[in-house]
Image (tube, rainbow, N blue to C red; front, side):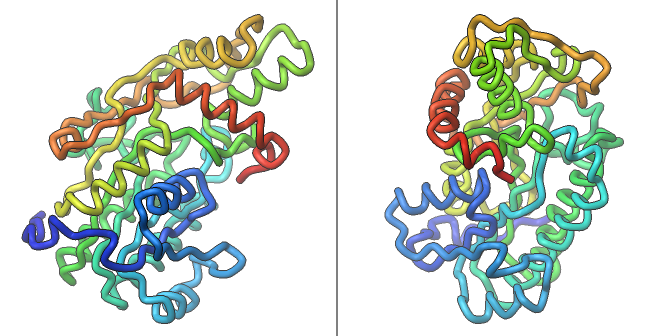
Length: 326
């Protein structure tokens, strides 16, 4: 695949409006915060009630009316291992439609640049660790999130093909596992970190001595604070012009057991861990090779323990709404 010339490498987001698709979610809210904090005054958003991103006609109408200069596409149906494994059809359909409608509307209205966020689950289950970008499509996917991964891979390829066929300045980034303010803490659909945080918090309130944890605790994962991802998104929008996807993460992983112990030490130090080995672990290990984005001059700034502490403070302050987040 070929890259576009570097004529837009100094392009500034301050030059036009930025549409954040999915602004109420974990990632979208962080990107919106980062844009506002950087002084951007023309951020475009639309709620699900205002715009169904699965409806091509509605999306086209919205783009034609609002004419965004830039698009950060982070909208989608997401969840943890339970939601992914039990709602595969929904995750595949919703995400295929959302990605296709927004990318096509961006093409038809001549958006200057679009950033599409994939997920590290697009990589094969048996990928060599740390996972490099060229591991994509080199082996079978993790079965528990195959539907979601296929949809994300389709979004990546769509951006690449639109660049090749139409000359669109569309780029793709692959973030690792994320956490932070506005995360989903619903126990049936959340990712591992917020799920553990809520379990420890509720066990502490109830005085329950043991906290149940899915799997053996041996699986290893990498975690990135969502505010770090938001800073990476702005960095890529201004400095990345390649057709190839690019990883975004810390390059450092820990076991689920280590993660649980870290969360427990912050939320409920007295609790004992109760691992349920009848539940799946998912991929044995997943950590990204982040050398390419590091070479671009970006690196994360929030340590995992401090990020967990900040997220827990946010959760306690917003518990009633956070418990039902989706």
